[in-house]
Amino acid sequence: MHVKEIRRAIVVLAVFVVLAGCGYDFKGAGLTAPVDVRTIAVTILENRTSESGIETVFTGDLTYEFTRSKVLRVGDKNTADAVLSGSIASLTVDTISHTASYASDERRVTVTLNLALRRADGKVIWSDTALSDREVFRVDSSDKLETQSKRRAAIETISERLAEKIHNRILHDF
Image (cartoon, rainbow, N blue to C red; front, side):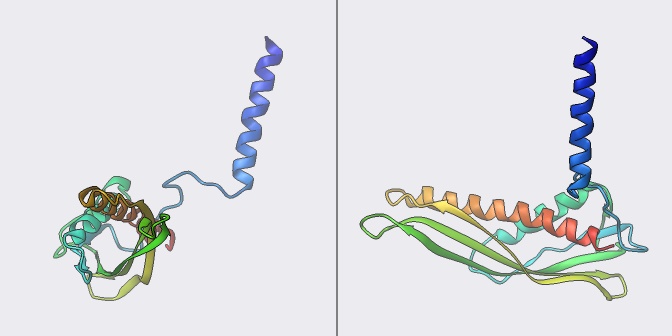
């Protein structure tokens, strides 16, 4: 029995050594706020696309990421130390595969954001003018509503991933 415990300890130790050696870190580790920024406001993103309502999805996911992490307190734009604002610059949908009859089988939606984090005095402390992500969805040629639902789900997936990426980029830069 004693030998099993030693083997188990060696395996656990080896896992920690490998994780430490490959640069892996746990979610949330090393996140720090910009100097003198304790609160952040996320304004509703400007929607420059023809996809109605996605500005609330993206803004909601960004707000959720900052609220969840608790590195910065989410507050009102009039009293926050920094304000995250910007736009959904583009949304494109491309066909990536066809059926034998040349109907779309899969499509890819790509969303690009243009964002800036500004201190209360207006000074930009972080920005990204071409942050994008994409997601593939299946096309149901017999049910247009189902295809629209899958397209919307793909956009929501992109929103969640971009919100996490933005949160981490903002807080890893400091």
